[in-house]
Length: 536
Ligand SMILES: Nc1ncnc2c1ncn2[C@@H]1O[C@H](COP(=O)(O)OP(=O)(O)O)[C@@H](O)[C@H]1O
Ligand SMILES: O=C(CO)[C@@H](O)[C@H](O)COP(=O)(O)O
Image (cartoon, rainbow, N blue to C red; front, top):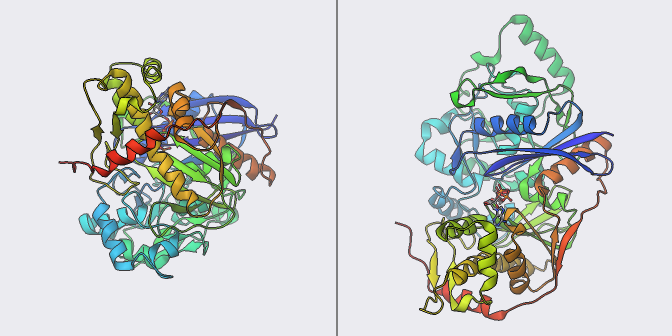
């Protein structure tokens, strides 16, 4: 049996699944948590990956691996391959003004408008706006930038043995950075229609020119390694980039492409990242010779993991809430509601993303001092519409609609409606109404939406499933709970190994017929119209 591994390095945790390359049969898995917050030191992702690999029993019997990851995170590297500052994540909203500035400079409409060029309008989540924030708020750091990577790109690069000279076998070869279409399309400076970086938009963001990495051929790599080891030196004497030197952007490679093979890491000793004493004791090793795939953004990974096809809409309720479809043509939405990303199978992934999703439910369940099972029981004990109580859940601001400074609003409370049951149900209804608006926006662009696949951590909640049938107007299928982003990465790893897309089956635990209750969306829209109190 040939085994492949898929990783999902998402906002809250790192998950790895190991499957049979031919049948997709599950073999084993592991996970490790990530730190909270909207800016994180990428070393925490690397340590979590090592810990998750250890938790899964290691990779000694694995032939290929791919990494799916949270999108948009800004990982900036200096010429020594060192991370310059903590990565700003997709859910960090400090670059909201930078997004407004970039859009004002480029314009939204017309053939040269932002949406036409890269399939989406810039919002705080996207990498380009974070680079513009870096240029304006941390100019000294911006000047040190030799390369910009996304979370999955940087982890893949480390898996291939690259990194700072004192932390990696192969040193800081920035030209070995690679990414895939789906994650590149979330930067807001790569065009799915042109299949190329829009280097003008990159330079407008960071204020310095960019260039796509050329890749490092294996043979060239062997020669370089001998030189470095022979001389006993390392690249560590590489200084900051020469003034005006172009910033390296990861090479964009298609799914199925081998970006390299792993180099032995770690070993019997404990892994202790020298810069992070809290990692002492993390043991984890990676054997040499595992084929490494291009990886992908997490939503494209979920689409591949679910084997989603045109006509399917995936609703993923994780840290982020996402509604996305699969199309065979690029999509551009001038309103900015839908982002016209690329998928991980050669097609496209029109997507709507909300900042608030599963953590709406964890916040309200904590408020009610109940676990998820009791939370579900309370919500199901309330009638659809929660007695008129409505939660517009913009707890962390909101990305779609683009309200980065908004706060949540609880409306429609009366003596009769103010109950634990109604609050639990209002939380679920508000979360799903926001995602239903996303499905409507995708549908308004002419995208088919015939079947809805409900996944993500919160999709396992029985009340979420029931309310989904009352909110969405298409049948809801609930795939067997699993890690579909990691499964998509595992499918890509098998694709990389065999050269063709796997035909692994997908199983389902529930099929919910349409049971729409119009009152839910009608009262939600009225509460939305009240607006929200800007965050202090
Ligand atoms: N039964 C449940 N009911 C509601 N929320 C849940 C349930 N199980 C897990 N979650 C939530 O799902 C989230 C994790 O989902 P996941 O898709 O793994 O997120 P991410 O990929 O963003 O890390 C957490 O916020 C967790 O609290
Ligand atoms: O911003 C997006 C997609 O545009 C999010 O989907 C992030 O990619 C994080 O995803 P999760 O951690 O919630 O899986």
